[in-house]
Amino acid sequence: MSTATAEHVDSQDEAHHHPSDRKYVQIAIILAIVTALEVGTYWMESVPGEVLIPVLMLMMVYKFFYVAAWFMHLRFDSPMFTKFFVVGLILATIVYGIMLTVFEFWHKG
Image (cartoon, rainbow, N blue to C red; front, side, top):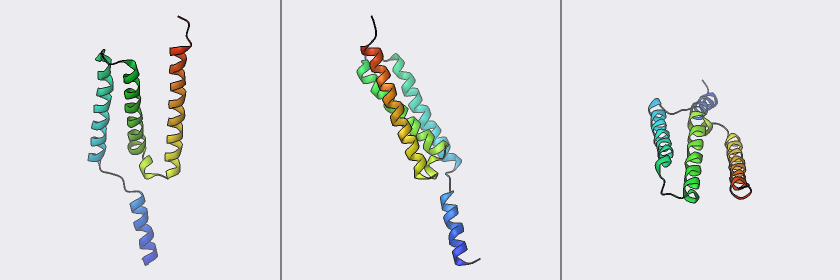
């Protein structure tokens, strides 16, 4: 095997190197903890909505990035795919924020 071929194989191995099962379990535990925190906000009646909604959205974004980066292997793909996900998340957050203001300010009642 020539040196150029060996370097090509090495670079392919590095590009397709994925973490162990243990790492995926650790990430799943982190996601479960964040989900438990989100569910736990249901019983927090003393926290005003102005604080609770941004905190929930931050947890949502955090979980989205973790799932996309690790379980969808976005972390190991082209940076272009990461940009698509980030743009999509930003647009979805803007649309969600607009809808929240519609229900808060422009409803009859």
